[in-house]
Length: 70
Image 1 (cartoon, rainbow, N blue to C red):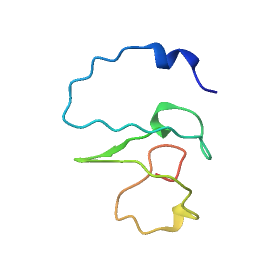
Image 2 (cartoon, rainbow, N blue to C red):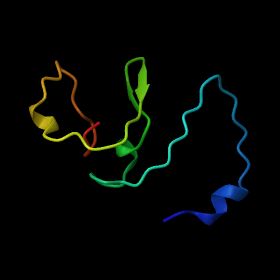
Image 3 (tube, helix red, strand yellow):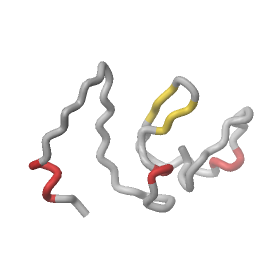
Image 4 (tube, helix red, strand yellow):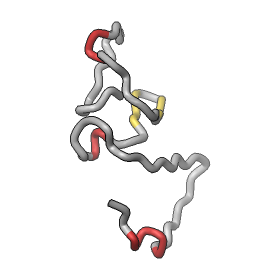
């Protein structure tokens, strides 16, 4: 559900990089660790879609932290 008040807020942001992303949760719980951007070491990323069978991918000691496929 869209928060109608978000358009009326002022944001004082100072950054060289800002990631904006609007999503509809398709899998996993609606909790902070499942939201974008995901951060691993020096990388930040977001993605759209669903990765099928993520538990069987060879991720070389990288594991998902939330309940999603990211």
